[in-house]
Length: 281
Length: 279
Image (cartoon, rainbow over all chains, first blue to last red; front, side):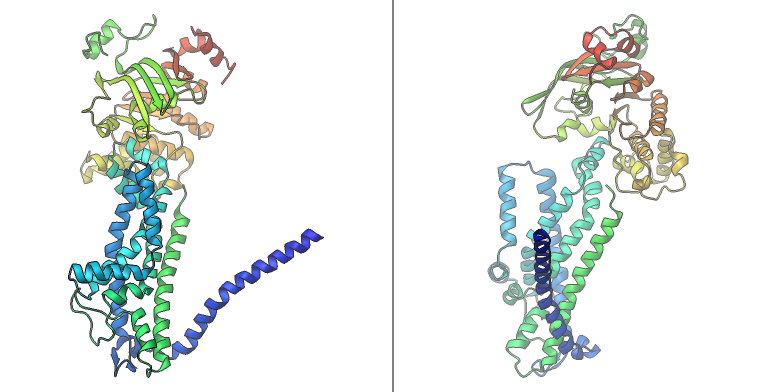
C-alpha cells in the first residue's frame, strides 16, 4: 500500500511540475493574443510606422527580420555543414578533434551580447561594413554556426556506416560518398537542426542592436550595406522609448514576432516527422 | 597466373601447363588473385597470419570457418575495405592479375571498381531502385544518359531481379524484401562491371528460398566473374564453390578443391570442422 501511495504522490508531483512549466507559456500566449490580436490588420502588416511609431504598421521590421534570417542561413549553413562534414567524415579522431568539439560546445553557450560586441568590433568597425544588414547577418551567422555544426554532426552520425561502405565498395571517392549518399540521407536532420537554430536567431536582440538595427526607419534597405528595422529591436524600441505609442501596437508586434518563431519551429517539427516516417534503416 | 619470374602468363598457357594448383585432379585454371604471406593487424591484435592462396579466375571460391576466424577480414583485404577502419596494418602482398594492390601508386577507388563487394546485411541506399543500380555507372560515367536505363535493366536481369521490380523502378529500394534487397545490392555491384565480386555471407540474413535464388545466381555469375564468398553455411560452400578455404584463428588452415576439403581433408582441424565437431 505504501508503494502504491508513493507512486501516486510521485505521479501527482510530476504532473504538477509539467503544468507549472506549461502555464507561463500559455499565459504569455494568451495575453499576447488578447491584447495583440486587435492590432493585427492588413494595414498593420503592410504599412510603415508613422508619427514616431505611434501610428502605422511594422512592415519594414517584418521585412528586415526576413532579410536577416535569409542572410543568416546563407552565412551559417555552408560554414556549419562544411565544418561538421570535415569533423565527422574527414578529420582523424584524436585530441585535436576533441578540443575543437569542446570549443564548439562552449561557443554555443556564449551569451548573445558577446557576439553582438564581437560583430561590432569585427564587421562594423574593422571591416567597415557599418551598421548594416550584412554586419547583422554575419554576426547572427557566427552566433548560430555552433548550433548548426552540432545538429549536422548528429545527423551525419545517424547515417549508417553500411551506406558509406557500400558506396566505397562501388568505387566512390570519399567526397562522392559524402555528397551523394551521406549528405542526402542526413539532410532532413540537418535542416531540422538548422531551422531551430535560425528561429532562435530571429528573436535575438543583442547581436543586432550593435550591428544592423536602426531605431527608427521609414523605408526599406536598398542594399546590404543599409541599416534595417528588425522585429525584436523594434519591439524593444516601442516598449522603452515610444512610451506614448498605444499598447496594441506593442502587443501586436510581439505577437507577430512570436508567430514567426513558432511558425519556423513548427516547420522543423513537421520536417522531422516526415523524415522519421520515410526512414527505415 | 604468375610464374616464378612474376610474369603474367596468358590464359591459354596457364591452362596448358596447369600451374598454381597442386591438387592432382584439379581442372586447369588461371589465377586472378594471388595472396602472398598476408598478415593483417587491427591495432595490436593480429587478425590474419601469413595467408597464402591463389584465387581462380571465373570460379567460385568459398571461405569457411567459425566466427571471428578472419575470413571476413581476409575478404575485406581483397578490395582494401579495411582502409576505412583506422589503425589497420597489412603485411605481405595481394596481386590482382599480377599487379600488387598495395603499391603506392595504386588508386584504391579504381581497385574497388574492379573488385566489387556484397555485404552480409543488404544495404541498399535510401534511394529508388533505379538510382541504387545507377549509382556506380553515374559515378564512373560508364554510359550516356540515354544508355543508362538499358544498363540498369541489364544489371537487374543479371541479378535475377528485373521481373520483380520492372514496374516499380522509381519506388524506394527500402520497400523490397530482404532477399530482393540483397539481389538489388548484387545488381548494384554488377552495374559497375567489376571483374571480381566479393560476397560476405550474402545469405545469412535471408530465408531459404531467397538463399536458393542467390546461390543459383552465383553459379550463373561465375561465367563472367571471379567470385569469392564467405559463408557460415558449409552446405552452401559445397553446393556452389569449386574451391574452398578453411580459416581458423586467422590462419588459412587448408585450401583446395571443395570436394577434397569436405571428403578427404588433410588437416585434422579441417576434418573436425566440416564434420561439425566445433564452430
